[in-house]
Figure (cartoon, rainbow, N blue to C red):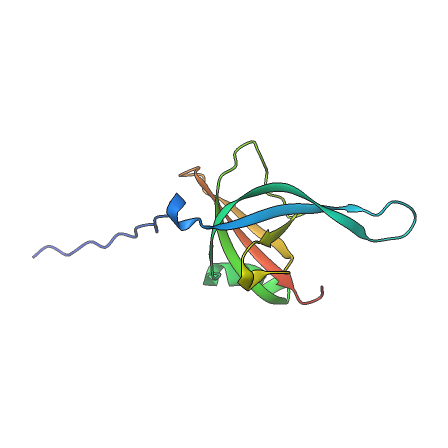
Length: 126
């Protein structure tokens, strides 16, 4: 009797799962000698699929104390925008309102080239 073979099948992400609008933004420094930042500037907007971080994602966050974390998947923006950990993310959903998310990790899918997975975190020291 032949043994059944079990192969891992990657979860299917499609445009129908990407329902939540997100904004990627940066701050510009305040003019003058006083420290700080002012006025956020939206650098990219798109729709994303949002879900809880996996064990792999939580391992990445072990080096910093985090209050909250989520993982998002967006369509690869190609040359329109390069995801940078110098930017912040705003999730336009009532459950995540008024939260400024830091980009903790970016995973490009080199086999598929259609999506980018981004780990977002709110650090305890902020």
